[in-house]
Length: 382
Image (cartoon, rainbow, N blue to C red; front, side):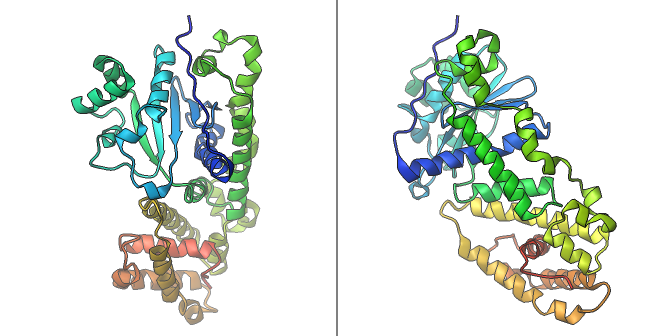
C-alpha cells in the first residue's frame, strides 16, 4: 500500500518574479546534471514540481526542496521554513512516502542562514540535533518528538548562491572540470543544460505520490510511466550536451604543440604566446581556479552583493600589471618574467591591493585573479 501521497501546491506568484525563480531553480540543478553526465555518483535527476528535485545516487536517493526569497529580507530563520506551506513540511511528507528506502532530505535556501538561530544546526549533515530544535519542529509538524528525531537525522539545510550569482558559480565549477574550454564554450554547455532541465520541469507533473513512482517504477501505473520518463534526466539524455566537458583533460591541454586542437582558454593562449612552458601554464590554471572559487565565496556571503569592493581589487590588480608587458615585450620568456614580477609585487603590496579582504590578502589568490582577468582579455603576458 502506498503511503499518504505527497502533494505540493505550486507557487502562486506570477510574471517576471515567478520566471526568475523558475530559471534559478533550473540552474541549481545544473551541477547535478553535470555529475550525472560525467558518471560521478549521480545516476539520474528528477524534477517534479517547480521546487522539488530528486537525485538518484549510487544506492540512495536525495529529495530536495528549494526555497527562494528576496535578498532584502535578510538571513533565514527556523520559523520561516516551518508550516504552514513551508519547506520542512514538504520534505517531511516525502520522508513519509519513502521512509523505507535509503533516502536523504535537503532544504536548499537561497542565501544565508542566521548563525545564532536553531536552523543553523541543520547546516551540519548528520550532526547533533538539540532537544529544543526537535521539539519546535515536532510541534509545528504535529508529530511525535521521536518521529521528528528520525526525520532530522536524515535532513540537512544547504545555503545556495543567490539568483545573481548562481550562473557564475556554475560556470566556475564547470570551468574547473574543463579548464581548456573557452568561456563561450562553457556558457553554451551551461545554457543547453538549463534548457533541457526546464523541459523536464515543464513536462506534465507526475502527481500524487511522485516520490514512490520515481524510486519504485514497478509501483507506477503504465499511465504515469511516460510522465516519469519526461521528468527524469538520465546520462543518455544529458551526455550529448556535455561532450566537450568529458573530452577535456589537463594533460592534453598543456601540450604546447596541440593547444589549438583542444580549444584553450584565452589565459592559455596568452601564456603560450608569451613563451610560457607547461609548468607555468599548469600553475596559472590552478591559481585562477582557486581565485574564482574565492571570488564566488566572497560574493555569496553578501546577499545584496558587494561589487564595489571586488571591482576595487580588480582595478588595482590591473594597475599593478599594466606596465609589465611593455617592460618585457619582445623577450622570449616574457610570460615567465611578468608572472614573477607580479608575484613579487603581490607579496609586497597585498594589503594595499586587497584593501577589503576580498581574497584574504593572499598573494597566490590575487595572482590567480589576475589570471582570471587575463582570461577575460583584460591582461596579457607578452
